[in-house]
Length: 391
Ligand code: NAD
Image (cartoon, rainbow, N blue to C red; front, side):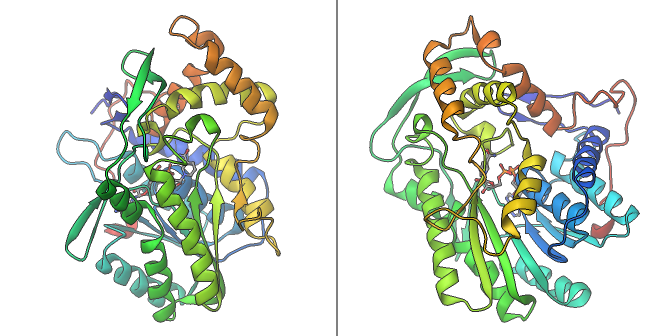
């Protein structure tokens, strides 16, 4: 069938299989062009199908020649409905990995569940013996634990927050108000996006004997500029990220033979970040300024730099709190001073001129496999793509 994008504000409900394959192919080509890097050989990536997790998996596999087991929560095609982008990305990843003689298996299911953890342990034990790196890159709306379903919320804590934002349906600048979360919403966000499940994973892997001695585990966080503190760092999601950091410290104290670290990454267009109020407008300004200053990176460039210059170093270059800072270029004073200048003068009329709103949308469509020059979108494609390891 002919697949077209169907965009509903911050989500696209269709995905193009050939475009997603092209997206993965380009990320692989970037990593290969940087040359091989000694590193982990057996890697588990939790949240491996899109965004930072997919880029981590590609870097581990095609940069370090690692065998990878990837976990994701994606939907296959059914009838006239395409699969999700993460499904097609994973099919493409496995295809390219196999072509290069790299082991690649995937599990499609709820990473928070005991069943998926058990499935992962069984596969690691059978095929790999042990893993030496675990990347935790989940961005999930909810989590069921002990018979309760917790939801993650993107709200402020304490007082409401009103700022400029972009209406993604019309590309107009609007004023957006975000209400403070209830205690229950804060608790829910911490349960879903905090460190509890990360720690569960590491403990069950270790207990099962499938985590190598001196293995590393990394989870991803965000801080951003003061402008977005009320909605991010001081908001519900920021509380969860604090918990993630505390979990890393706790694991380092309590678990022998494993090093846990949080990497604070740059703000980028992903399915998770597009949904955060105010952030897409910030992103479109940030993109323009970082591109002009020559420091813009996408997911694959961030993850390739993480693996090449920080995560695998001994000792790891970390800040006072023990975190890897991949947001160093984003938070550079030269970048942020410009962002604030543009933010103050930004209006619907000058949006295209002072921001990279086109770059924002370019990345957005590409996430779902659209707008790749190499793909002929007028051609029929088979949307029912199989993921070899799930057969
Ligand atoms: P994303 O939406 O692109 O990826 C989320 C991944 O999690 C996907 O692979 C998805 O399949 C998987 N997933 C979701 N729920 C699942 C479940 N229940 N079971 C198994 N898999 C599940 O998101 P992203 O932006 O790459 O975010 C990954 C991490 O990076 C998050 O912790 C996020 O906070 C962090 N981060 C993102 C940014 C950014 O700007 N995008 C910046 C810094 C840090």
